[in-house]
Image (tube, rainbow, N blue to C red; front, side, top):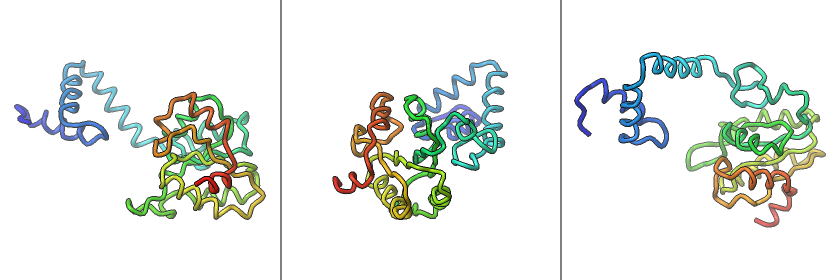
Length: 206
């Protein structure tokens, strides 16, 4: 791709670093921004800078938040005895959009994947186990994507807490095996939460 401007080329190269954005899409986006009023571009850059500088992780669930305790964890109307374990913040957003879950979340920050060099120590599993062992939680729902890595992560966590008097369930397999949770439609995902099954049953069926 030949550029008539080094500044344009630099901008396209940077935008193309974003996931799912190729050089042609990046060029289209940059040219669009170039046509916008200067203040529009300023609003965008300011929003991105504030996002990078001021966003933080909730100290309780590790979800993205503007304050120390996110809106979900600080909501007294949520069921604090029910905890849904997810891979990342996109899964929290997906489940919240179903309006079928009123408990709290724990965001792992990924899933165990030896091939990608991700082990239990790279996730927030330790803080999850510590939280559960404090005794306030009555049920954990594993809502990880039904992939080999997701199942491995579920099993690893289960072995850390199986000695506790705790209900451990997993979302029903309305989500196709191998699919990522964030791409499930709201109705299917909502039903999978409502029709969750005991985790031990999923071990027998696997």
